[in-house]
Length: 318
Image 1 (cartoon, helix red, strand yellow):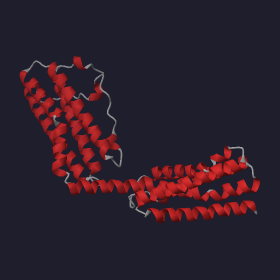
Image 2 (cartoon, helix red, strand yellow):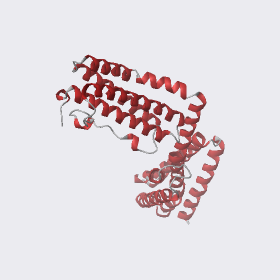
Image 3 (tube, helix red, strand yellow):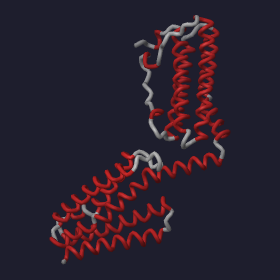
Image 4 (cartoon, helix red, strand yellow):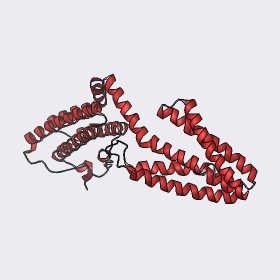
C-alpha cells in the first residue's frame, strides 16, 4: 500500500482516471437501481455518469500526451488513508435519500483529492486540469440540483413520492399492522381466560408470554413465506416477516406485561387500559396510512377487541 505523498505525477493522473471510472460506474449503478421506482431521479444520475466519463476522457488525453499510452492500474484501495466506500449501490431496492447522500460524499471526496493532487503537481498543464476538475467537483452538488429541477418536474416528483409512500405502506406498514392486530386481538382470549380462571397474575403472564412468542413466530413465518414480493411489489419477504413477527409479539406482550404486578385486580385493570391503547393505536394506523375513516376504524377494532376480550373472560370465569 502506498502513501499519497509518494505518488508521482504520472501515478496521480492514473489514480484520477481510476477514480473517475469508478465514480461513473457507481452513478450508472445508481441510475439502474432507481430506474424502476424513481425514473426521473435515475435520469439525473445517468447525466452525472456521463459527466464523470467526460472527466475520464480529458484525463486520459492529458496522460497520453505526457506519459504515453500505458496507464498503470492504481486504485483508491491501493492508497493508505482512503476510506473504503460502502457499496450502497449494490443494495436493492435503492433508497433515494441514501443515494443522494452518498453521491454528495463522493463529490466532496473527489474535490478534496483534486485539490491535494494540484498542490503536489509542478507541471502547468496537469495543475490546470486538476484545478479545473476540483472546481467542477465543488460545483457538482449545484449541477445535480439544476439537473433535478430540469428533469424532476412537479408531476414526476409527485409520482415518485407517491410510489415511495405506496412501497412503504406495502413493505412496512401493512405487515406491521397485520402483526399488531393479530398480536393485540388474538392473544386477548388466552391471557384473560387464564387470568380469570386462576386469579393468579403469574399464570396469566406465562400464558400471555407463550401466546405472544408463538404468535410472533407463526405470523413472521407466514408473512415471509406468503410471497416473494416480486409480482406484488411488497418487497423483501424476510423484512416483511421480521416486521410482522416483531409487531405480533409486541401486540401480545403489551397487555401481558401488566400481569407482572402481583395483585390480580390491579394487573387486570392496567392490562385493560393497555388493551384500549393498543386498539386505538391500530385504529390510528388504519386512518393514517390506509385512509380508513377514523370513526369506522375505531368502531371495527373496538368491537372486535371487545368480543375477543369478552370471550376470554367468559371462558375463564366458567
